[in-house]
Image (cartoon, rainbow, N blue to C red; front, top):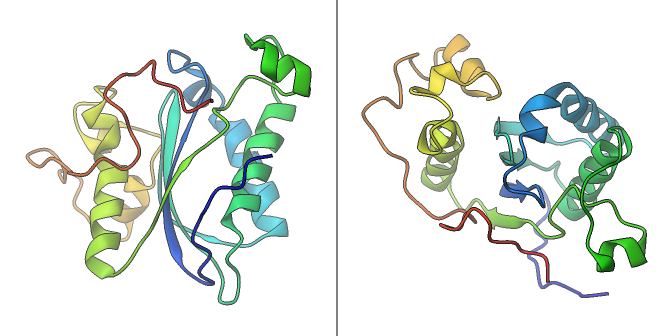
Length: 185
């Protein structure tokens, strides 16, 4: 098994990008209730705070803060992905490698993470998450995308409903220009 060099900072805030294996799929937007249940399952066993999250058809972006003394975000992501996979019908295309390992073919094996370094970095990450559905053409405005914590920010008065109309969030944050690009190796 490959060992990835990842930072493990207890209590840190992390930005994640998690992709489906089939980047043409709409599975996440079609199964948001199942994804919410997966998050509840993980949170009950390994608490964390969701600072921001947007679920798009083929990937999700999340900003999570872990409790003090806890640096184990890989377990949380693994449990989220596996719980979700176990609770949807099989039938996705799987390569020989996944078949040999008895794996589902729903998620890309890897994910992208970034440790949030300060308040400005957090703001930039949250803005990116909330603007991402607009960036990908799923909504004309951030407020139009239903699967986002943007609505919580508006309800709390942290952002106005017209936020994101005339701005563009910057940064790569783990996305590639080629939607068919895979992190499976």
